[in-house]
Image (tube, rainbow, N blue to C red):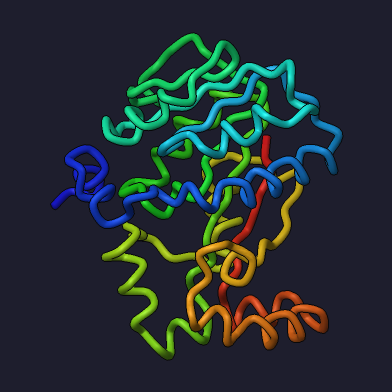
Length: 234
């Protein structure tokens, strides 16, 4: 089955009934943090692969963004049907291939937990680059000593949530640079321990991750895993 098919025929929604909407307030906070720390005050924000639109919905409710126009694009008819229940004058959703649209540009374009799902992510990133002044990527760092030794976590991510590419910090940043992006800022997010749908393994690893991260962030990410990377680019 082609990777994109699962998002269009309903298989992804069947395997992930909430489309991870419960994670959206946390993700919105990370996005707000990186925008604020770089003094970026957008008037238009677009999200490609917006799913059910809850990240944009959370951002639209923040006072700091009360004059921002938000647009969400996704190829999944099921996701867009859900997202359109959240529409309002400043928040619009479209079931379209965003990369096929011409003559549009946004202050900020976001791809939050997207590029690990895209079969040809080099072409995807090159086409995305000129769609906005700034681009924000949230990229799961699935590759660690922990996940490689255990094996099962990588297969779980592939079959359950559709990850077909696996990254470390270095390979994620290299991919962005290879496709023409200028990296402005980035930081780790502790996705395994801070997201609301924390697994049993995430609970058990929460303290070790926190302790090692406080001593050596890069080592904690490479050895224990459970982190993602939020990247602001031009």
